[in-house]
Image (cartoon, rainbow, N blue to C red; front, side):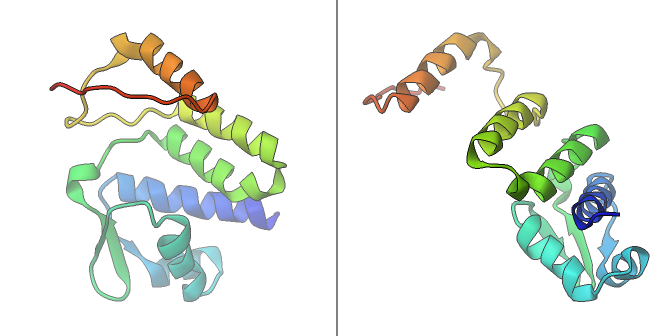
Length: 141
């Protein structure tokens, strides 16, 4: 099995377990995937550093409970596969795959406002940014 596939599977499993509210044990994961503890720690501290970690000692981690169940297992697997092989693609492909990933994974939470009716305005905003135009706006809640 290729190392990128192993990495994707490892990251997927970690994300799925965390998303279910479970705590992960770096020692158990290292044994399960036949890698070093340092490799699992690198996964957590570097590859998954965007997550809101709740560290429970030197071996155990879990997600902040307020952030649970925000991604489906399919979303997690898609992200992990993309993240582990993204360095194999030329820059133009990275942009393409990032756009596709962004379109396919929508994180919803109670703290987010429904702005789907503003899609056209956001498309215009995106175009203006890409064209390096000056943008100003007022946000009113």
